[in-house]
Amino acid sequence: MDVRVSLFYLINNTISDIERAKLLNLLWLKAKEINIEKALYEISLNSINSITPQRELSWFTYPVTRALISNKKLEEAKNWLFFINNDFKDRAILDLNFCKMLLLLYVIDPDLKKSNFEIPDINFLLNVLNNNLDVKKESIYNLMITFKALNYDVSPILWEKFYNEFESFSSSFNINKTNLFLILEQSL
Image (cartoon, rainbow, N blue to C red):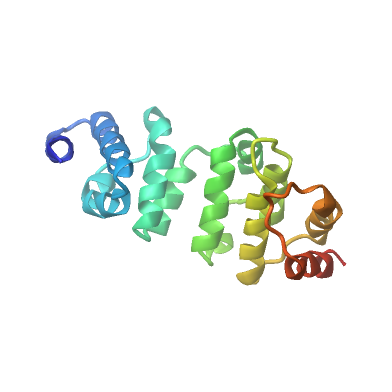
């Protein structure tokens, strides 16, 4: 507890954005160890808002975006996530964390497509994950179900891939017959 209190004191008394970002990140890592990061995201919101996105803080993009999303500050989260104006499709392919953050924003923010950013669509992002060997198929399937429940159009081609791969899924992949019928129905 003393470490978190000291970090919070330092965060509020430093004048450097870079130093404040380092301290916030350390505070959140300490909070995550004992599962209180959401509370500290909320407590540190004023400190977060005192920092502006800049190239020197690109390493801080994902932690601060996660904190802002947790606080339902979606516009601020988008400002951080998109402050480096690259081609978002290329960035999603090259940076799996960026791809995951975009998908998280799609889940949280129903108005994401209405923003002024040229954001890749859900199917493109799901395919990026599906083509990555480090991402579990079960996670992608769960995302597909989530987006289907949120009334997003998930590509029939992606559903078909999952249907065709159904037999090769490991026993740890928890798909029951009802889910199989959903996959089949969506792939037609």
